[in-house]
Image (cartoon, rainbow, N blue to C red):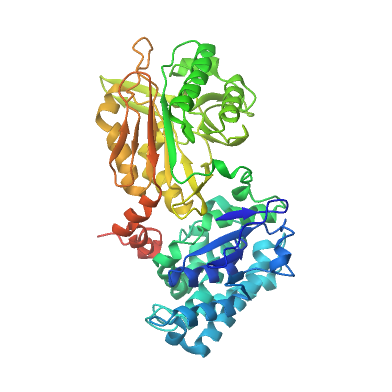
Amino acid sequence: MMHLKNGDPEPFVDPTRYTLFAFRFCPFCVRVKLILSFHKIDYDLIQVSLNDKPDWLMKYSPLGKVPLLINQGDKLLESDLIMRFVDELHGEKTSLMSICGVEKFQNAAELAKKFFSPGYSILYGVTFSELDVVKFREACSELDNSINSKYFAGDQLSLADLILFPMIDYFEIILGIIHHINYDQIYEMKINDKLYNEAKTWSNLLNYLITMRQESFVSDIRISTNITAKFIASKRSGLSNPDIQRHPLRNFKQIVKMLRLALLQMFVGADKTANIKRASELISRAVSEHSPHLVCLPECFTSPIGAKYFGPYAETVPNGPSCQMLSDAAKSHKIWLVGGSIPERGPDGKLYNCCATYNPDGELVGLYRKLHLFDIDIPGQFTFKESASLSSGKETFSFEIPLKNAENKISVIRVGIGICYDIRFPELSLLYANQLGCQLLLFPAAFNPKTGSLHWELLGRARALDTQCYVGMCSPACNLELDYISHAESLITSPWGIVIAKGGKEEEIITADLDFSELKCVRESIPIGRQRRLDIYTTPKLVKKQS
C-alpha cells in the first residue's frame, strides 16, 4: 500500500493484476475494497492524497476521480459499477448480487445516499444546519425500519450490504458531532450517556453495524471509528490529517520484508551526561552488530528512577540534550528510534514520563506521556508513588513504519507505545490493536525485582495474547548501586504469546526479526477479533445485572 501526493514518483501499474487508486477515508473507495476483500482478490492499492493529488493521476483518471480500478488495461470508475463488475466476474460460486437482486441493491444504494448526504454536511461542514440534522435522523429511522433481519436483504450477506455499510459506518461520528462529543471519545458502539437515549431508538441499525463489523472480510480492510473521527476532526479544523502525515517513502531501500527490532537493555547510572553518551554508543553498537530497523531504549534511560530524581533530571522536549542525541542518532544510522523515556518538563511546567520517537531522517514523529502512574504499596515490601512528582499524559501515541511483504508490495505496520505500568491495563493495548490497528506494542519499562519476578514475563505474554500482536518490553539493566533496582530481562513476545527473545540482568542488546505475516495466521487460527461480543461489552441496554 502507498499513500502518495503530488511530487511523489508515479508507481508501477502491473498489467497482470488489479490496481485500485483510492482515497484512504472515502466510503466509495471502501465499497470497492470490500468487494475485492470478499472475493479474496489480490490487488495493488495506491492511495493518493485527497488535497494534493499527484499530477500523474490525471493520466489514469482525467478528472482525478477515485475509486479507479484498473484491470488488464481496462479502467473502471464509479463504485457501484465496479462492485457489479467484480461480483459478476468472480462470483461464479458466490454471487452477492444474485442473493439480493437488482431491486434490493438499488434500494440499499438509495438509503445509503439519504443517510450520507446530510451526514457529509455534518461531518465536514464547519457549521451545519438543523435541516441536515433532521434529514440525518429521518434517514436513520428509515434505515432502522428497512433492516428487519441479520443483513439488509435477509439472513444472507449480499451486494446490498456492501453498498450500504460503508456509508452508515459513520453513524457514531455523525451522532457525536451533533452532540458536540470530542473526537477522541468516539469509538464504535461506545455510545455514552449523552447519545444513548437517542441511539437506542435505532436498535436494528445498531445491531446491523455490529454484524457487518464482525465480518472478517470487513475487519481486514476497515479503518477504526476513532481514527476516522480523528481525520474528520482535523479536516473540520482546516488542518492536514495527523494520521497520514507519514514521511514520504523517499528511499525504497529502507522498506523491508521483515522488521528487525533491537531492545537496548542499557546500564543507567546517576550521571545524566554519561547516560546520554552511553545510550548513543549503545545505539551505534546495535546498528553495527545487528542492523536493526527499529531500536528501542529503556524507561528513564537518562536518570535513576525515583520522585527525587525526576525534577533535577527533567528537560524540555524536544529541545533538550537527550532528544538532540536521539534525533542525531536516528538520522545518522537511518533507523526508527523509540527513545525509551525521560523526565520531561512540559510547557505547562508539569513533569511527565515521556517517550519521544524519531524517524530515519531524525524527525520527531511524536510524543507519548505515560498514562498510568505507578502508585503502589505492598505492605512491608515495596512502596512507590510516581504521582508525587509526575503528571499523567492525556493521549495515546502510535506511528507507522513502511515495509514490504512477502509479495514485495509496500505496506505499513503500526506501532503503539506505552510505558511500564501502562502494560498492566489491557484496555490500552486492546485500543491500540483493535481501534488503531497496531501490530507491534513497545513498552519501555523498569519493573522492580519483586513485581518483575512475579509479573514481568506474564504481562508481556498476556498482552501479546490479548491483542495478537508482537510485544516488546525494554528495561534498564540491573544496577545494584541505585535506590531503585530494575528487574531487567527485556523481552520480545510473539502474537502466539511465546517469548522469542529475552535478556538477562546485565547490559545487552536483545533482537528479533518480526514476521508480520504471522499475525494473519494467528488471527485466522484463533479469530478472537471477529468473535468479540461488542454488542454485549459496549451497549448499555444489553448489560444486565443479576438480582
